[in-house]
Amino acid sequence: MPRKRELTWQTGTGNRKGRWRKKYLGKTYYFPFGTSKSDRDGYQKALAAWKIKKAEIDDLQSHQPKPHQAEYEEAIREWESALQWSLQNGDDKQAAIARDHLENLQKRLQRSIPPPLDHDDRIWGQFTSQPEVFEKLFDTLAEEYPIFRTLSAEELESGSPHIVDGSKYALHMDGTPQRIQKELWQDRIASQQRLSAPTEDSIHHWVTQYLNGKRTKVQAGELSAGRYDPIRCHLQSFENWFGKGASIKGISGKVLSDFHRELLEQINSQRISQDYAKDRMNTLKSFVHWLWKMEAIENLPRILDSNELRISKKLSTPAIFTIEEVKQLLEKAADRTKLYLLLMLNIGATQVDISDLLQDQVDWEHGYITRKRSKTQKHERVPEVRYTLWQETFSLLCQERAQNAERVLLNQNGQQLKVEELDATGRLQKIDNIASAYARLRRKTTIKKPLKLFRKTSATLIANHKSFHGLESYFLGHTPQTMSDRHYAQAPQALLEEATTWLGEQYGVK
Image (cartoon, rainbow, N blue to C red; front, side, top):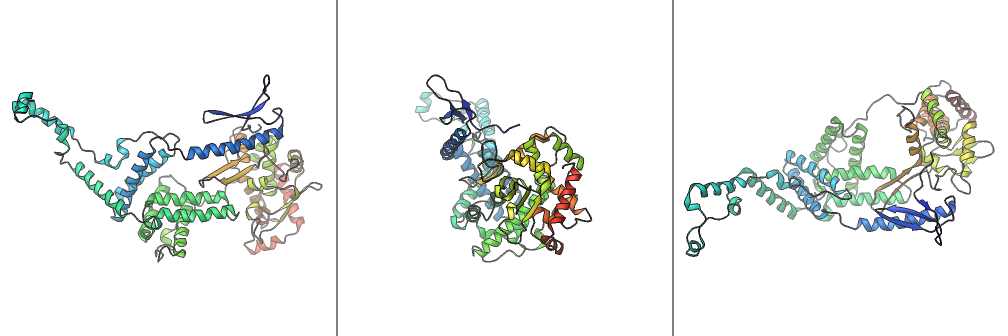
């Protein structure tokens, strides 16, 4: 099924010509390009105009305050101060309460229309006393003792004692532990906000500096947007846990140990995976090393590089497709989707490799593809591999080939198949036509295995074959690591062609 277009064609009427239309955030926008729905050049111009317009709208929206935003920000500041006080004073129980509230408030604030705050969203909500008890006391006294009755105007003017509204004095008579705790925390938060670290010394300031450096690498092509995003998520998670206003000088061995324990608890409760927790801990350790190199902290915590902070990678049996599963998926796939799967099986391509495939990397006469993997193409030691395409792969590639374009395969809108880029706020914007096509295919079957296993399946088959064992890294385009890998970096082309032909036979592909 073809990918749905972003814009809708509106046929002309009377003196008005046809135009492209887009409804966004309750308003309709029109773009007078093209002569018909099939005018591809007109659609591309309209789409480009819409993207410019959308960026303007989104930028304007990002500067508009959300409903209740001020109340949320005030509550978040209070809980951040409570968290900092708790960490500094070893109150782990209260620190956990503060983190839970911060996570909840930040998630709700991310909504386009955050709901109003509840009483329990403020720190005072956990110290609710019962002033109504004292209000009832006044009412009871008035009923039992006439002296407490409401007096007349004449009596009031004469200066006689009179009954007052109990609610006005109830709080002053409240000696409950809740009221005392509430005032105690008011003092703590006020004190903490006065003592908060200077901006240039705060964890938030240094995380921002670190991420700005990573974003510069993304812009220079030294780091992928897809890798930057988990780094951002991991460090922002830590600063929320530690307290954005806390000083970086407070990152001690105990803090790292406590955060490590928190990650283990999240693994045990199945909130995050073991591999994800390992990546989060390693990202934090890299950040702390960077702080030391930047002379932001004088010494590294002694625990930093010890096994105390180790999180093991989950050991599991490598999953691959069975031959029957591959055949079933290829049989049910539409031509374009089938081509994606064949390229993964035939040349070990990733989605990025397929999206980045250039016209001059294909021998259109003999059916070869010669290239380095997109991810590591700048590395000198990465092999440039020439793959022989199966007849069906080559036939579909010729059929789906984009004309007058640098890239071999584009989507219906003439855009790249896979795009990962950062928006103005540093958030990852991701488009993956290949993954979307595979998701539609999976809905036709009971097979739920991920897309990345196609190339892994071919590599595993090669590794398990006695004549091709050791060739799998070369097939995947990896940098040679072992002596076997280095040997196959200079492998005779005939051996790879033999392995590729054998793979096609296993899948029933010519």
